Amino acid sequence: MAGRTGTGKPFNIMVVGQKGRLQYEALLFAASLRASSPDFAGQLIVTEPAAGPRWDTDPTIDPPIREALADLGARIVPFSNRHFGQSYPYGNKIEGLCALPPGEPFVFFDTDTLILQDITTVPFDFPRPSASMRREGTWPVEELYWPGYSRTWKSLYDRFGLDFASSLDLGQPDEYWERYLYFNAGWFFGADPAIFGQRFTDYALSVRDNPPAELVLQPLDPWLDQMVLPLVIHSFGGGRPGHELAGLDGTVTCHYRMFPLLYARESDAAVEMLERICAPNKMKKLLKEHLPLKKMVYQQQGPEVRALFDRNDLPRHEKQIRNRIKSEGFWMR
Image 1 (cartoon, rainbow, N blue to C red):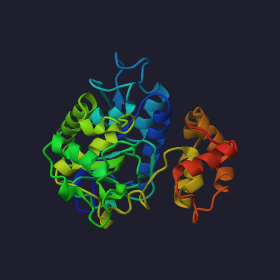
Image 2: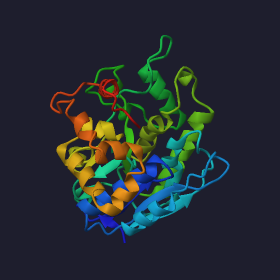
Image 3: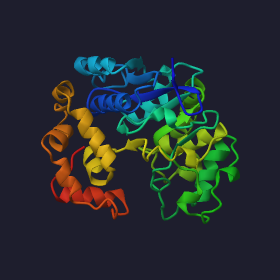
């Protein structure tokens, strides 16, 4: 069975898990989902890259974490990296979609996310896909001789036969980054992971292997997934999320990115959830093996980081927050 939203439509949830940081984050995600959405009847699918030639070391999840994920109701499903892998791990969210049941609506979350309230209350409109707007203007990068935002983005829409004009936010000025459809790939959803994933893959490979001339000065790593995602969503008739999805990156979910950033800027509810799900002895035994959790949660450095900032008056840019944490000696990934 799949979980149901406020609209009654079934869906599955996908996160990516692998050895290292992501396996611990996946465990926290599963625990927070269980705590916040006890009636979620669907599949939490942890897509796991299989060992192979595109990985220097085995990326599979450690056995104790696998067992704990299973205990929390998660299903680990392996997939093979045909196009990405160690050289571009962000590609896991693209290729991993093939591990989900085809034809069933899905919601993808970055693993560094906590579920704070019942996810089944969010009225996802799966035929109209969307994604997170919690982003900064990271791409395209302004360069001395670049063609500008409009020509850069239009070259991508033209590549795939998409209508560029209908993607624009005309309430924003021309050549300002927010005028153009741009998401954080921390969450996105769609009606069919097989079709969505194939198009995501096709678009990403086309841009990576043969970028339009307008992109000659632009970095594609690590931005490839985020620059292609708007094109994929637009191609399915989707766009910017409406007010009904405000609980994502809000009261329902928290994309914390890194544990020092969670303590620095996220809500009291997010901190309470993290510390609550870390408290059981079985979880503590596993999670203390991850140094950032050991220091931030179990050695109580997190509250010291939190005391450095006023959540009602945070620095405007994430880089400023990071620099303050680093200057105090608390930064870690």
